[in-house]
Image (cartoon, rainbow over all chains, first blue to last red; front, top):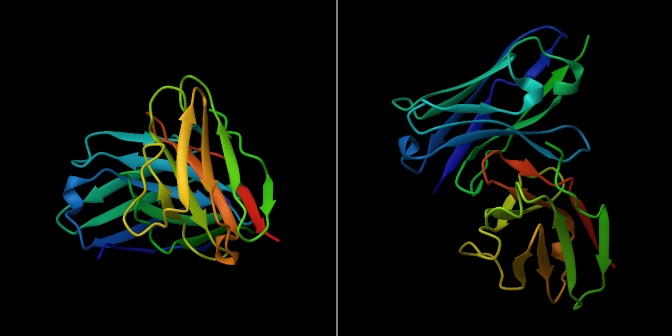
Length: 115
Length: 108
């Protein structure tokens, strides 16, 4: 059974940083592109970033370019999202998802940016 | 890129059929059959219902079907049930991943 478990969310002040993690199991992690998708409170889904199987290609939505960095450790079967210069509009539940049609999702971790 | 366009809400009675549209451009929805649909109940993670415009993952009811014509994809739910009440999102994954704004389905 595929499992994706996010962690690292919390309350952070504007301008602060946070690192999210996603632990994967139940599939060969190194064979798949992976994504982060977020959902602001009461709003729709927004794709944030994705990363190729070997980490050699990374793509971001325009609103986070230069502030967020996606990475992975295939040996640890883990996906990461380093978030810097956080803004109020980054407040959301952040999901990691396997990038093959987003067929599998974690339960999400809440990031709140507020003073 | 702007989000794909979905109606904000649709409704139907039990047993009826409804269709949710998802309109994009020739650069996303219209370029390939890389369109997927997700169901999301309150407080839950999204669930994949349709991929590659019309394919159903194992375990998804055959009451759910998808199609695409030009720059518009559609999700049809037949034989509406109370449990189908949820938010539905389309997504184009031709190149950059782009979601629709979501449609709230109410089962009357």
